[in-house]
Length: 289
Image (cartoon, rainbow, N blue to C red; front, side):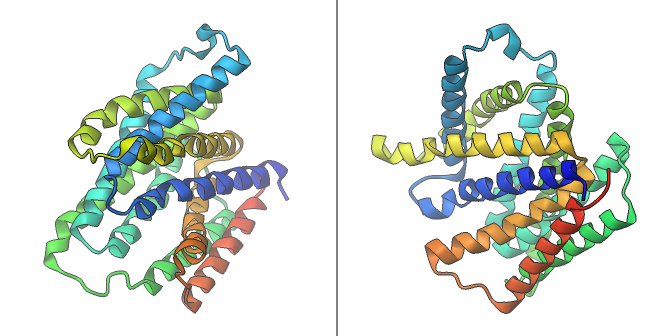
């Protein structure tokens, strides 16, 4: 087993698990807060967390200045735009269908990794990719994806696909920046730019929460920072084409979250899909560098 690849898969899976909590925040919030509002407060909490880390570690400010601010801005723009596209698509078509289309981000990321970064995919890696993709398809199919097709879904479906491509582009930027910049610098820039980019959408969709209502969403910041750090560590160790399919594990973590907090009992197909994703992840972890 390749130790670096195994470690990379573990880091990425840990980050994905933590991000599942962040993504589920909308369901916990119900109608009390809008999606842009939650995302903006998460970035505020993240930047505050990073400020505390900088102060505690007494980092010299000059060490945190990036030589690639435009790359950080592009990464933040791609991520924010992809997230907003996913929200917009889910509002115009069944959520399960929008989720299924959003899973194309892994396929797009693998393709961009091969095309832009010159990554290579061996036979064992293809086996892991196929297993993970089959598992993800099994889970979304069990939830009823694409059972009811409607011509009105064409535009939302196109928006969902565009969002998946934007998120895949962000993945490439994460990989590029993670090997060129310190993790703390990457985190500082993306959270600062995230606050700026989402300020207007959050203001337009703002719902009064009160001071006590704000804190749960602000506290998503430390969780998201930890998740981002884990993913950056993972992408420093392995290629996008290898780690991309690990993103499918969020379906497994989301199923666990639904079972524990919302009493959503998975069906046999969901268990089968989770087993395929786990098997695919193990195969990818064993790929030689």
